[in-house]
Image (cartoon, rainbow, N blue to C red; front, side, top):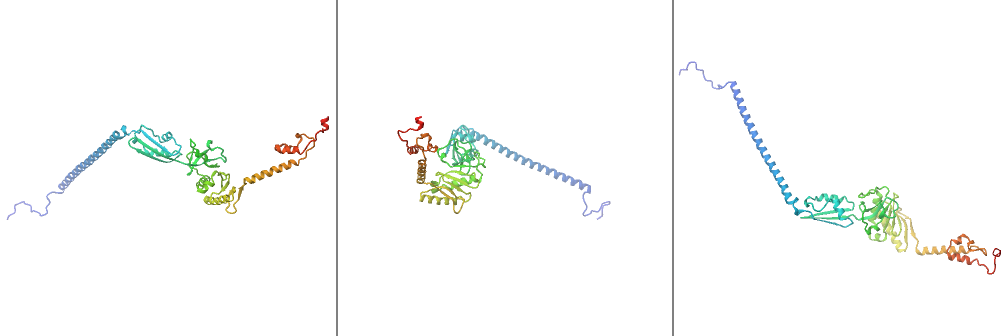
Length: 366
């Protein structure tokens, strides 16, 4: 075969386009791909935003729908209006005081009352120990209060004549919480008195913090045993010494306690009380600070007091009888000691100085 003139020979790996054309084609391909990618991205963002807006709209509609429905069904429903508030207490708190402290009144919606807030507000009252609140549908709330039980009076003075009318005296419970009752119950009149708390700042609702006051409360708690409660009834605890407790019971027995190991000291005191009961004697003072050779004094019996009185009277009579009296002297001239005695003694003195009848003194004749 003959080749055509001017025909170029074919090369097996000959490129169809040159470098410039290839660059333009690559740029076009890149632009097309980037434009498509941005379109897909925008579509994806639009879909996500639409879904988010739809979810937010549904949640908002559900929220406002629940709010509207709850108002119509519960909070603005006259069937759930509070009409009955029952207050039960085992102490002296009045119903008006409880409702005022709880900021609770009839006529409000029962669901608007937050029971937790009511309980916290009632716990701020010094007299309140425990509170139980029950909401009974559709219109009742029941409040049960357990008040603190006072175990003693406490004052900063060393002596307290009338704690019931003193502004510086407070009632204190077993936990040391100070309180002041507006109405005094009869059982408060026989409570023991803790005196001498001069280092304690006494305020209503505060808890005692001094070691002496806590020791006095612990002694009262330990002395409530079956035997000690009937035989040793505390009437006053003086903590003013700072190193001991001076306790006076109903029989005016004065017992000195240390702060350490009160239970052991009470057991030792019980042994002394048993001994005095067996020997028909009465304790006057006991010092339990001493572990051995405890100082003890006993009160005088009625027979001893009577004997001492009789002996003293006889001695006075003997003294009066031994006084000399001048003859013819008037009763006013007797010694001054005779005037200060009883009428019977004076009459004996006069009998001991007789005046003879029919004789007159020179002064009478004159």
